[in-house]
Amino acid sequence: MASKFSPAAIVEKVIPSVDCAVSSGSDDSPEPIDPSAEKRLLWKLDLHVLPMISVLYMLSFIDRINIGNARIQGLEADLGMSGRDYNIALFVFFVPYILLEVPSNIILKKVAPSTWLSGLMICWGEPLRTESRDTADG
Image (tube, rainbow, N blue to C red):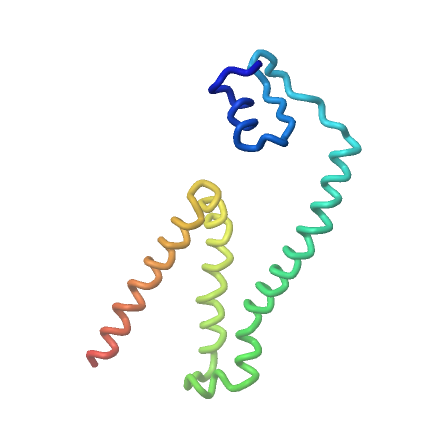
């Protein structure tokens, strides 16, 4: 019989219909993994997760190439660009994007995504706020 405060007793009290087999802690060896069950699980994950990731990757790619579509529809005329201005704009955008993508992903693994994304928003928003205030002042 399990003691009053053991994990098995607590689970039985909260969910009485569950047959709980909680280890007492004396046997710490992990159960062997069935290779065929692992293969079936990975196949199910591949069928459910990979299509969603593929769609997200495609949308990300479309978003990155959208500036080409904007050029075709008159971006240069609307912004008063001439000569190599468009190429310089692409260079200014894509080079830091490519160089900072990997370090950003490494940092994202070490810091909580909510913290990292919030920090990026603040670090990007402050210069934009300052620039808009300077532009409004004349």
